[in-house]
Amino acid sequence: MLKGLGCDMIEVERIRQALSRPSFLRRVYTLEERAAIVRKGAQTAAGFWAAKEAVSKALGTGFDGFALADIEIFSDEAGSPHVRLYRGAQARLAEIGALNVMVSISHTKDAAMAVAAAE
Image (cartoon, rainbow, N blue to C red):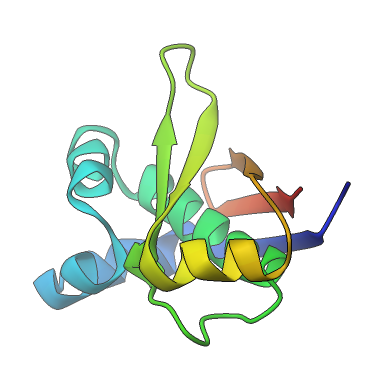
């Protein structure tokens, strides 16, 4: 049963500029995400950002009670995006009675968007 739904969209250029600040990278992205960003670039970083925002909306709180890095976006062998939740984000998932969060990410040269569903 659907417990929450969220979406977000971000300009790739905005994230590209923010990536020049190491504090932004450390605050927003996990080590695994940072490694993917180094390999794939700003479009991937923007997709991760949009996915994290979408997940926070699906959890119904925004980032109240947890940080951006408490949501980790990763891809399986086929390239499909998935979500891992840590600390406060994992606790919020349990609070809303959900067991899983699914995410879909898409981007163009200029923008990235994501949709997340908590079930």
